[in-house]
Structure formats: structure tokens, C-alpha cells
Amino acid sequence: MHAAAERRTSRWWIGLVAGAGAGFLALGVGGRLAMRWLALRQGQAPVLSLGGTITVLGAGVACGVGAAFLRSLLDRAPQLPLWARRALFALACLLVTLRGLHPVSARALAVFLPLVAGYVVLVELAWRRLGLGTAARPRREPDRPRRPFVATTVLAVAAAVAPITAASLGAQSPARTDSARVPARMPSVALPPALARVLRDYERAWRAGDARAVAALFAPDGLVLSNGRPPARGRQAIEATYAAQGGPLVLRALAFATADTVGYIIGAYGYADRGTPAAAVGQTPVPDLGKFTLTLRRERGGDGRWLIVSDMDNSNGRSP
Image (tube, rainbow, N blue to C red; front, top):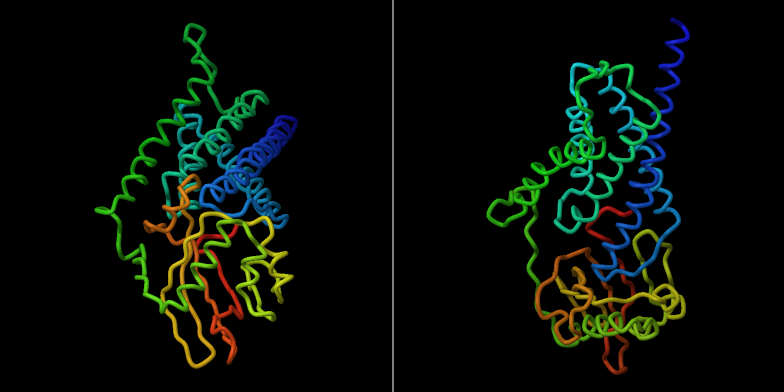
């Protein structure tokens, strides 16, 4: 009896290790690549930070272990048929995914659902390969046909995923959106020509990937205060910060003010889809991905141009 208990304990830990491995591959590595693909589709710079990558990989392992623990608990309900256990397991993974993707978008679902389904299949393959959970299942009757393993798993995943996915996508339609939970888009304000030039010149330089032209819009002692990075002071440091970055950036103003030689612009930024013709970028509204503040200064007796003293921005979404 002690030997049997020891084997069950060993199998329990094997299941957690298998879940961690599947989580690392499907949710960690796959999730990190998916996040960068989505960022590229939105026109953001293709930058992979070490800290963000470690965080995502660690979260993938943690989620993999937690889901494997749930899978082990389901094996303690032998009265449930195997397909039901697989469906419940897939359903739980899906619910966690939808919570992590909130607010849900069709593009994010199209990228992350295959990763979750792949994780579920990997765990089920490991369960079968390692003989986990077999003690909880009744013996198969000799004359009862064996259901194909892959087909059973895929059908169970589909049965769990399809209804909630359809409901999540349907909930995004304008007629059914809960206005109390989704904040309204703040209206844009019209800028005086001298201030509008700052935003249009910034967009033009960023779209061209010209970091030197972006830096030239700043005062000599200007600052860039980017989210998750230390400050960059001076045009040379700003040019280095923005090197190899660019994309179809769209800026709009939410508020502004000027007083003599100082002023500010508060605004929002987004990106047009990759492949949008240059002449069409900014002609139609794009979703706000983040917000920014520009503090401005102009020198007396100069050419009257407003220069950026500080540029602070942060994303509306969760940092990877």
C-alpha cells in the first residue's frame, strides 16, 4: 500500500513537470512571439526586452503548472467520462485566456486560442504517454471500441472553446457593448497651426523611421520619458533611443494650452495597419493604443517654432 501511494505521489509530480514544460513551450515561447506579432501588426517597433521575455516565459510555466494541477484533480473524478474531463480542462484554460486578453479582440483570439489549444493537446499527449490518470479510469471493456485519442481531444477542446469564443466575439458588437465598462473615446481637439505642425512633423519623421528628424523636433536639452525605460536627455540620446523604430503612427490632440513661450499638448496615439498607403495614413480614425504629453517651449526672437521639452507616453494595454 505504501508503494502504491508513493507511485501516485510520483505520478502527481510528473504531471506538474509535464504541465510546466508544455506551458513553457506553448504559452511562454508561443505567447511571447504572438505578442510581438500583434505589436508589429499595430505598427509598433519590433523590440524584445529581456525583462518582458522572462516575465512572459515565467507566466507560461506558472500557468502550465496550475493547469496541470487542475488536470490531475479532474482525474480524481472517475465517474466523468474521459471526453468530459478533457472538455472541462479545455474550458478552464479558455476562461483563463479570455480573462488575460480582456478586452477580447478577434485578432488576439485568432492568435492566442491556437496556443491554448496546443497546450491542451500537449498536456493530454503527456498524460497518455506517461500513463497519468490511468488509475482513476475504469478498465475498458474488451468489446468496447477505442476512440481515437487525437480526435477525442480535438472534439473536446472544440466543444469547450466554440460557445464561449462565439459569445466573446458577439459581445464586441457596438449594439451589445456595455458602455458602463468600455470608456468612451475622448474627442479630439483642433490645434492652432503652430502646434499642429509639431504633431504632423513627429508623425512624418516616425513613419519614415528617421530618428534624427524626430530628435530635431526636441529642444537641445529635451527629454524622452518612455514607459519602462530610463529618461533620455538631449538630441543625441533621443536619436539613439528611437533608432530602428518607426511605423504608421497617428497622433491626435485631446487638450492643449500655451502661455507666452511655454505650452503643452495632451494626446493619444495609435497605428494604422501595416500596408496602408502612406497617403491614407491618418485619414481615418484608428484605435488609441496609448496616450502622451508633450511639453513645449519656443525661444524669443527665434523662428517661432515650438520645440519639445519633454515627451512622456504610456500604453493603454498591459505591458508584456
